[in-house]
Image (tube, rainbow, N blue to C red; front, side, top):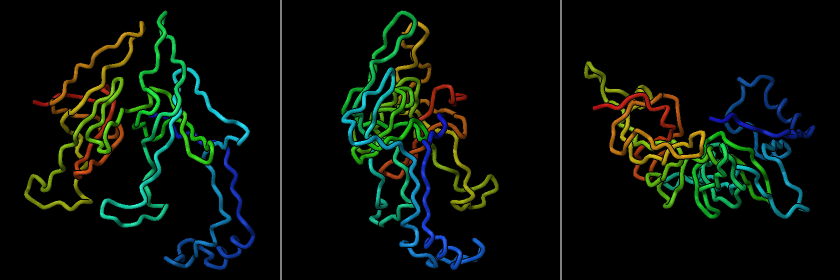
Length: 250
């Protein structure tokens, strides 16, 4: 999984905001909900994206890189509850708006398989964020694209390269001794059913090597690998590399 990449980001705090923070509390531990008003933070600016000046009219990614228009964060829960900006989950999807010329492996030229206009899901911490025409974009390598999404439901994800898409088994409701478990004490499962597999990774000659894992298999995978998703039906899914699958259960 790629590390988070952040550009130099200016942080400005007005004197009035600092005075308000000091007056509110001398220690963080004494702050109470509602003590600070939203207006007190308006001068506190953090930018995590490189801003492209208006004089530039296009961005052309190079090599095996792809330019993605990031999908806006969800402002409401599935139940219609409005979320504050701090509680909105960071999007992991977007639309491909430009692609590079591809890469060379051995003597073979490998084009990028993902077309412009495609809706994709990408690794959570991949790429570099860029603000272009007041819209958030992401420049990332093709290999950081987890899969294509042809519908609005994550269960229909089509994994790419050596990715495997798994429906996670439900957590056990009871211990071996019959004690009921609460949501906080249920252990996260690392077992699931494979519902889709990618075409495989490229070898040193640029040829696809099919995966040995097939759909329908029940597998045991590395506990902290991959990217987690929740489907519209409430089911949990995970997309990870085939190398993170440790065993097939039968």
